[in-house]
Length: 454
Image (cartoon, rainbow, N blue to C red; front, side, top):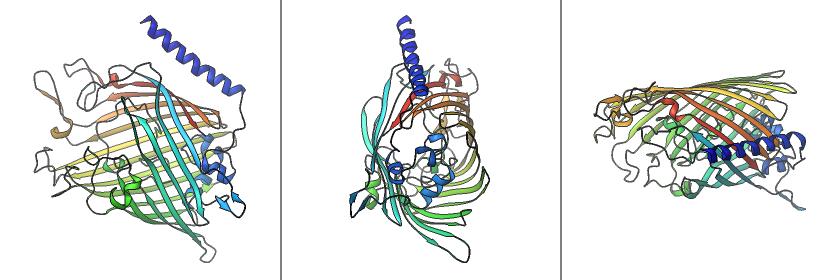
């Protein structure tokens, strides 16, 4: 115990020293990674406080306009910038007695520094009307490292000017529903933006939030007068033509296998007034998924997700404040799984709510707090936990908790984070009543990390 305490203290001292050094020494690092080099702007131009992935109004417009602002990659004088970046994350976490959705212990490396992953990033303007953002990373699966595609988003856009108005029309292809979005309320970009890789998550999440790097899409969108946005995209399984977007994904090992093309929709209204920005919107997806991705044939399960979200930002010169909320209702029709006996009901539902707020001081400190809730139908085929005598204790995915996080931008290239995640309910249990000596707070996690991008 004494050695463990000494090790923890040493780690904390190192982190604190990094913060102190970051306060005293602020190198004027070159803009990062590739898009900052392309535009010649600092990270804080696109990201609130320079803290990725929270976007400013300019950052949102840059993305919707197809990543086309700034210099071309190549002109008659040669290459203008390096279109690549390198991202990485290292850290240390502590958890009491974490358990997964079925109550099985989760293996963690409490108090031991770990490298979580390293990513190569490509981001560039291709032409005056097209651009691309793509990542490929290697991550630690605890144990073992594995390479795979990350987020990929390819856009082509054009501006029209009917009357005195502006109409931006775009075509988009990506590998994760909501990845193309510009708000930090949807699943791909919602808070928490990162989490301890070894810590357990909620036992259930909507299908729209479960398809990252497993799909490919083609879609079209329009933004009218920078206020009204509509989009329709179609997603299919990420093989064949879309395999380059999903390298490293195995449909033989549990990845979701979609049948045919599946519609995703998005609409929102946004308004800027002085230093304030408002947004209200809706999004959703209808997904047909084979029960067994290894043998994609026969009847499919149908997941219909409908979401509503809102975001408010106050962007002062030295103080910035953001409020975000998102609610998703999912109807689950088990036309494939129910006849096979994989689930106990032919129709279920799942509901999730995420609310959070962030306060940023200058381009240095960001303080964020949020709460998350999920509940749904009792489904013994998916969520059942029993006591040692075989008595079922819960069959619901109901989970609730909170996340507290402090971020410090040490330099434009390095971000230090301290995050605490707490559970008040987990898999339907609210106290130590399961006869196994476990409680929701056993899944609480303290995580300290450094994120870097060059």
